[in-house]
Image (cartoon, rainbow, N blue to C red; front, side, top):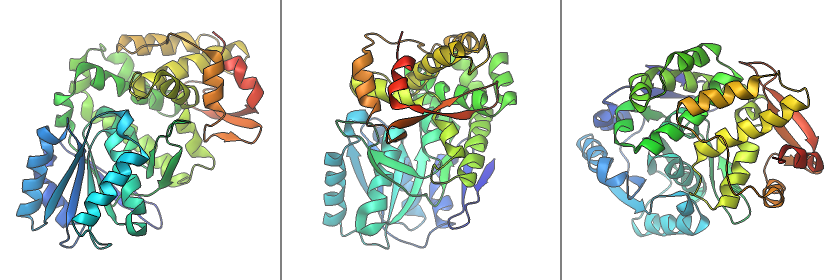
Length: 355
């Protein structure tokens, strides 16, 4: 299966194919001339897949170097970025060379940020290996690193030259890592795709059912994100719909300590919290919060978080990228399958953080 992200200045394809990892060299050769490639990965994904990808690339005539960093959200930092820059310099990487991100969302965000800034930008490809990265973070060109103040505070928009998705990599994920990716999938059904929502309702919620439906879930999710990114690449309007659950979710991630609550888990908790309050305010239909909770719990996702510190969460929100002066743009779901921007005074956000 293939989807085209037909941006006018930088179109590229998403390839979704079981077993495609061993064809990486062939795929890259169809996109790039011979050049040195730095594979950026973490120390969990690297031992699983780096040699397979490296061999395929070398067989296609690409010299390859490998940079591994410690797994986890804590590595998505300016400090690790600096380590990668030094590695690239020491290996004589030029503006004509390239980076491939091989891994989950942390790898993709970090490698993309480095690719966008090293020598003002070098070639870049995404090979996402987690469900969260395959359905969400590898698509659309958002890159970034965290700071002590907020998640993804330093970053750029930098589109890859292509995305290669092999659903078979999901079989090596831990159960928690697989399930957390469903937070983003459920979000896509809620904000845009009722057929996806129906498919989720028809599933039994087990990890086995996720793997069985993986290709369809990935394709439908990617199609929603592809369509929205093409319509609003730089997050000025429609693309904000993708942030349903993220405003509070990012605050939970940062206040809990990066990595303590996984991204998809935080998104779900954020969706439930903002829906509960918006429903009480008459901004979302009666009963929708319970529908969201039921769906998320079916797949084993957490729908609440403790300890819940309203003041700490609010302080984190004041640094959120969606804050605009004295207001903040939140996303609500006026009905299943659609989303809307709800811009409110920043002070009112305290209402949405009350348990």
